[in-house]
Image (cartoon, rainbow, N blue to C red; front, side, top):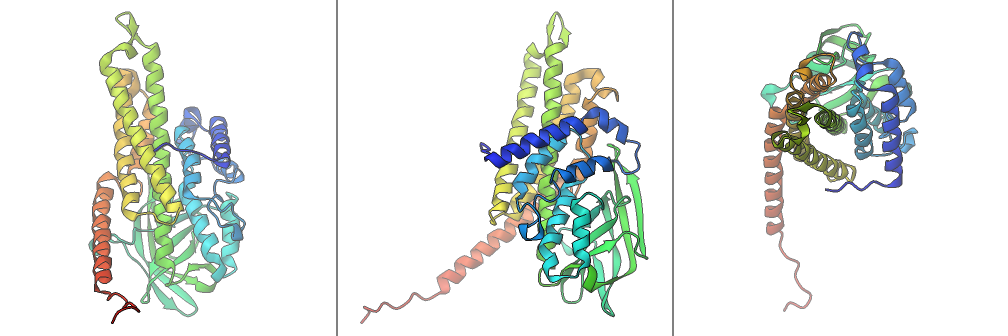
Length: 396
C-alpha cells in the first residue's frame, strides 16, 4: 500500500519530525534511563502543546477530531527518536474521556483538560475484553451507596508508578463500566519494576477502592465495554507505529555504518551477504508499514477488523525484534556496546514488542477473532437464506 498523505497530514508529519529532532534522539534517551519516570515530563508538555494528545479527541470536546492514522504518523517519528512518553496511551485515554464525558459528571471535564495539557498522566488499566475467561484479570465493581467499590489486580501496566490516575474497565453485575480512578485513592497499591529501556511497568492492586460514580464515570454498562475495546485497539496501533519508527531508524544506522566501515580495503556495505540482510530487513519494515496504515485507515473509516489489529501488533512485535537484532549483527562488536546507538534501539524494541501482549499472544488473538468473524458471517448468511422472498405483485 502506498501511503498518500493529504496536506494536513504532511504538515503534521513534518512538525513531528522537527519536534523529535529537537527534543528526542539517543543522547536525550540516555539521560532519561536513570530518571524515575523513565521519560521527560517537560517533553510531554511540549508534545501536548503540539496537539498530539488531543488529536483524537472529538471536536465537541474541543479536540482536533482526527483519527488513529494521524496519531500513527506522529508516533512513527517518536519511535525514530526513542521518545518514551506514553503518547499512544494518553491520546487514547483523552479520546475516551472526550467521547464519554457528555453523559457523565463534571469531574471528567477537569480530567480531560489536565490530560490533554500534559499536566496529569491518566494511564489506561485495560484488558482485551475478548481474552478467554481463564486468562482474564478481572476488576470487579460493586455498587456502593452512590458509587462503586473496585477490587482486583492488573499486571504489566506501563508507567503505573508515575501515573496521576487510571482509566479502568471494571465488571459490575450489569456489565462493564469505564471509570477514572485517582492515583491517591485509598486502597490502591502499585508494585513497579524497570524494563531494559529505562521505563517501568507495574502491577496495580485495587483493594475495595471506593469512588463516587457521578464524578468520574466515563461510560456506563451500555457503552463501557465498547469504549474500552476502542481504547485498547488504538493503543495497540499507536505502539505498532512506534515500533515502525524504531525499525526504520535502526536500519538507517546500519546502512550508514556499512557505508563508512571498511574491511579488506572496501566498505562492508559492498559485501553481498550484508546487502541481502539489509534488503530483508527493509522488506519487513515495508510490510509492517503497509499493514499498519491500511488497518488504521479502516479503523478511522468505521470498518476496522479486530483480527487485523491483532495482526498488526503481532507482525510489528516480531519484525522490530528481528530488524534491531539484525542491526546489532551488522555493526559487529561495536553494536553490543552501550556507547553506540544501535543497542538503544534494540532495548526499546524489546519493551515495545511486549507491551499489551507479545507477538505470540496476538497471533492467538488473530486466530480467535478470525474464527469469530467467520462464524458471524456464516450466521448472517443463514439468516438471509431463511428470509422468504417478497411475493411479486404480478404473481397469480
